[in-house]
Length: 149
Image (cartoon, rainbow, N blue to C red):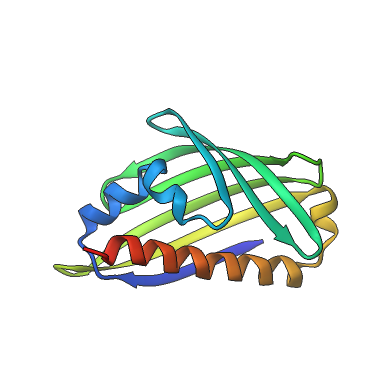
């Protein structure tokens, strides 16, 4: 499943980059985040609780930043497993930050997500609907943090 979003943030590129590259700063913007552990400068683990359809998930995910071109481009690869074995998730995501003015940037991201297990039995419509809601909440949280000053 391919997920793509694009939105504007009223902040300079360096501020956005410093925020999104730091798991401890961006992590709390993720809906359902329970825990985040930084393993090294490019690797972190997180635990996120979400509900997809009628299934509640507690995903433990390891994310690795595989490409960086500060402050404009990043690629990550994530692999997660549900604690109750409802499924696994593999995600490859790119994030691009494009300056539109001195104090505003367009952020675009593209995530290619592969789901297996019970999660995969849900239709793409349910998965997309859940993902869209989580994405909207994430963007709202991110913008609030970056634009608060």
